[in-house]
Length: 285
Image 1 (cartoon, rainbow, N blue to C red):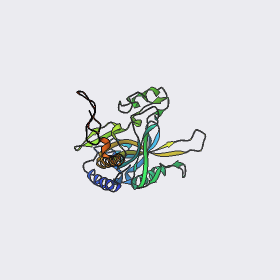
Image 2 (cartoon, rainbow, N blue to C red; image 1 turned 45 degrees about the vertical axis):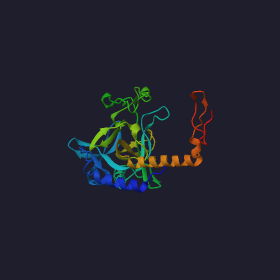
Image 3 (cartoon, rainbow, N blue to C red; image 1 turned 90 degrees about the vertical axis):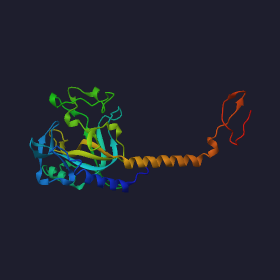
Image 4 (cartoon, rainbow, N blue to C red; image 1 turned 180 degrees about the vertical axis):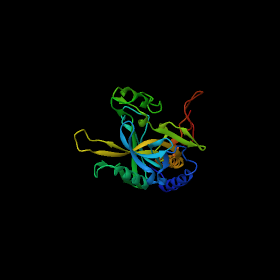
C-alpha cells in the first residue's frame, strides 16, 4: 500500500498483541491466541459438515473445534459482499505466527507422510504471509437441515450467492465467517465491506484437513487454515497512509497546474455576470 508505514504498523501490532491478552480475552473456552497454544492440549478429531479432520480442544462441552487467533495487518483480501465475478470464498492474507506451524504439524502427523498438502505460506516484503479462507458453500445431498444457515444481507445483499443454493449446494454454519470490530472495549458486528488492506485485525482460524482424492485413488489430503472471524482493531496506520497519498496528489496537481490556472474569467454583458476576474486581474465589459 502506497505511503504505508510498515515500521509503525509493526509497533502497532505489538501493542495490540499485548493489549488483547487482557482486553481481547474470549469468553469461549475453545478460542485461544495462537502464541499461547499448549500443544499437549490439542488433539485431532474427525468432525463437522463437510467431513474434515480438525484440531480440537477439550472443554466443558467435550472436544470441539479449536479457534486460533492472531493479530496482524491485512496484506490482501477478498471479502464480501459477494459479486458475480467471485463467488468462491472469503479470503484474507496476513502475517502469521510460528505457533500455527506447530499445530498444523501435529494435525498432519495423523496421516501418511507426504500425503497432506500444507496450507500456503508466502514470503513477502515484510516477512511470512499466510492465507486463510472459508468457502461459501458445502457440497453434498445429505446435509442436515439444522446445519444450514441463511446468508447475511451484509455478505450477499444482491442474492448473488443465494441463487446457487439447491439440494446439493448448501450454506452451512461451517461456511460462516464473523465480521466484528472492537470499539470502546466492546466487540460489535461490522459489515465486511468496511475492511481495508493495511488495517490491523485479529483473525480467528481453525486448522482442518480435507480429503481431496477420489474413491479408488491413493488417499490425498489438503491442510487449510479456515477463516472463522475477522475483528477490526486499528485503522490509524491505514488512515495516515491515505492522508499522505492525498497530500501527495495535491502537491502533484499544483506542480502541473500554475496557480493562475485556477482563476476564472469574468465577462460582463450589461448587468449579467457570467464569469470571474481575468488572470491579469482586469475586467472586461
